[in-house]
Each structure stands twice: as C-alpha cells, then as structure tokens.
Image (cartoon, rainbow, N blue to C red; front, side, top):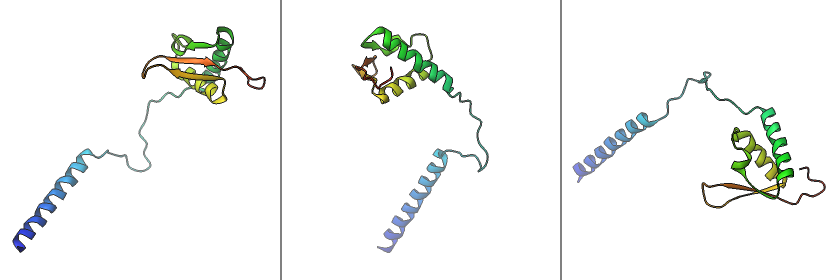
Amino acid sequence: FESQEQEGAQEIVEKMEKVKEAIKRLSVKTLPKGRRKKERRFPVHISRFETALEELRQILKEQGIKLSFFDLIKGKNPVPYFMALMNLYQEGVVEIYQGEPYRELYVEVLIPSPSAPL
C-alpha cells in the first residue's frame, strides 16, 4: 500500500513539474521594472474630436431624423466621429440602433429640448 502511495505522490510531483514548465513557456515575458517598451500608438487629438463633434452636430441639424452612421463618416477617419457620436448619445441628443449584429449603425435624432445643444 505504501509503494502505491509513493508512486501516486511521485506522479503528482511529475505532473506539477510538467504544469510549471508549460506555464513558463506560455507566460508573457515582461520587461524589467523601470523600462517601458516603445509603442507606436497615435492617439486621437482632441481637436479632431472637437471638429468631428461640431461636424456631426451640423449634419444632424441639416439632414433629418434617422441616418446611417457609415454614410455620415464616408471617407473619413471613423474613430473621432464614433467618439463624437458616443458623446452625443451620452448627452441624450441621439439614439443609436443596430439592426443585426455586426451590421449598419443607425443614428436617430431625438427631439431636442431647448436646453440641449444640437
């Protein structure tokens, strides 16, 4: 009985060693503390966001109640316009719908109150 117990304990130790090796291989390598990896990230400048916000406000005033988001941003960088759209959604100026998952986004202009800037 003791020999079976020792074999079982030995198997567990071997399995643990295999798991440790697998974790070492799969673990993400990190840089030493104090050193940062150089990244090539280009943040959206606030002026682009402000320009997109003003342009969206103007388009929504002129064009109507329900519009396609992709038609609004055709040929433009979508990131600042999407950020502006989220800002308008948060302010309660527009509602955003999507018919099917991963399909067209529709922007519906809510009836603006006198205090809501559009």
